[in-house]
Length: 194
Image 1 (spheres, rainbow, N blue to C red):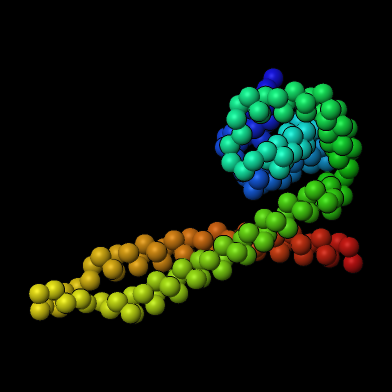
Image 2: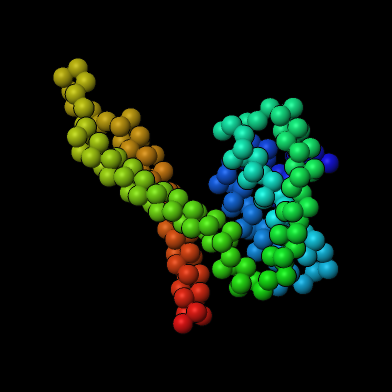
């Protein structure tokens, strides 16, 4: 087994960054938490997911940003196995014994959820900015341009503004649906704690 094994557990390419690791962890942890998934191997899979998350986050935060050299990653993996693997597995086994709702209130789940929510808010604002910038650009540029004394339709500018606007709408729709689902989950948790 080598370091790429942990990326495979979370279903990620080896080029995955911190955000992708956190999102994959949340999805997999929810799918395999023994309180939700009653399959025979769910407990062990949940432990493996937590172990992979801990390893990959340590690797990402301990190494340089971007790709880590293979030799460096292999050495890190050997140190990991020697010092940290059993400790991570004990923590993961403890989390697996929690009820799912208790696990969702744990710091690891709340932190990944909060960071994801903050990124969604940023993407929502970015999408709005893109749409406003496209509208202002089209207004300043105009629908027609002068070409050899004739006014012709500014097709290039219009097509560019449409594509940019579609990108903004895509950012807004994806981030808005994520924000709504986050608020829905948060509302349920708030009502349960009252």
